Length: 94
Image 1 (cartoon, rainbow, N blue to C red):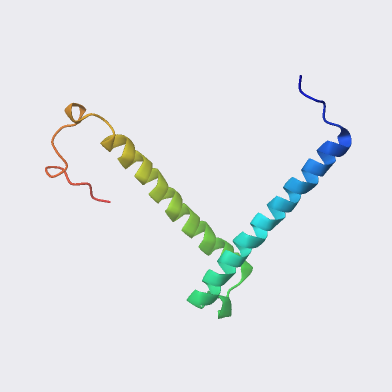
Image 2: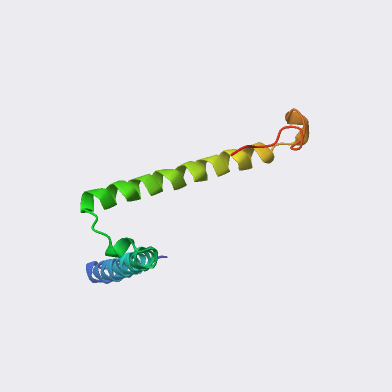
């Protein structure tokens, strides 16, 4: 039979998860700061609004690529007799 968790046990687990979340955020921030510094963006006079717009554009681009990759993967995972032609006859342009 499973033992019951006490409120103190749950609070301890919550605190541990919050600390893990904080560390993940810090690591992510450090990663983006390194990229910004390496590319020279960190030294540019860019407003927060412009930075937000740039990151939204980057995110949209990667979401499209992920979606296109998923579509391509699902198309190529179908048996050959369900597709018309071969990859050489119909090259994927992307």
